Length: 433
Ligand code: XUL
Ligand code: CO
Image (tube, protein in one colour):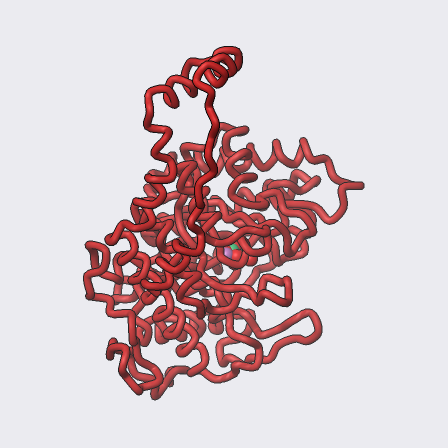
């Protein structure tokens, strides 16, 4: 019997519905911003949080008792069955996984790989039978103790090799399953103390590693996007892929800026001291925007709490930047979000996703309406209108400091400060939420 027995597929019932498990805002077939909402949002369920995470925290272990828990192939198949049961209830178009989430660890690389490929085939059959597609695959290079000092940036070349072999295997499988992207999150690519760390050597290792991944992508003809997921810390004290700006610098340093894009996560942006929309807007302005991991952090705890999103305004501002960048291409909205550890029931997992999908749909509709209205862009254009003048263009392109100084004196320039209109713009946004 299905773990989710008794829970019917979720239907769109409109904002007035009194049914608990219904979509009030997410109507997959509605046209919003010129396309079907399902195709705009491209929702994905994350295998690790929803099916593999046992509910532990730093002070206590497992709280969830899922019938599929266990390190056997039988358990892995039962886990995949449960996953596809949830997918059938939610009807979302995509899912994501790490190798580690879907297969038991073997005694050797060869055995782990055998386990992995067997489950990949099993998942592939389920996908062919009408399940969702793969938004992205990724390798877990951070949970096993062999990776405690990093994967690509490990001081031991054998760990680099093990990590490279793992990424090859998982990228191949992602390709086989028709994945749209491949993600690299550097969960242990950083340091605990500078006292034992060679920054230059580790950066060069990471650059070489990523170049090999890109080469392999081209070799096998994978048409998806390679994505790096920035995060400033956790689990390591300092992570090299700190934020968008840092990763952009890294990609340029190793000549990979045209090959790799970014997967941006709400909670990671907050940990880095940014807003989510800042990270998206910056990535888009650098031509590096790829995909998002949607969640939220608790604003008091200071940890990466990976909660399901519940704030339409925050979500709207994020989607606004995505729409401004032209919307998703290979990317999508992956719920990198987990239940609270007291949320024990099967229905909790369903409700978490339903609520999150609805909040995203609400935010997206607000973003699309703002986009169509054009008020923010009109205000922005007006604010920078002075730069359209010939003098302004010439100053940027030609004038030396001497020439500029002479002109300021000659024209007796006396710049007058103008209102930034922040509150009026905030009121404008509130009208759409
Ligand atoms: C960790 C995190 C990961 C990546 C994939 O904070 O976000 O789950 O998304 O490895
Ligand atoms: Co993530």
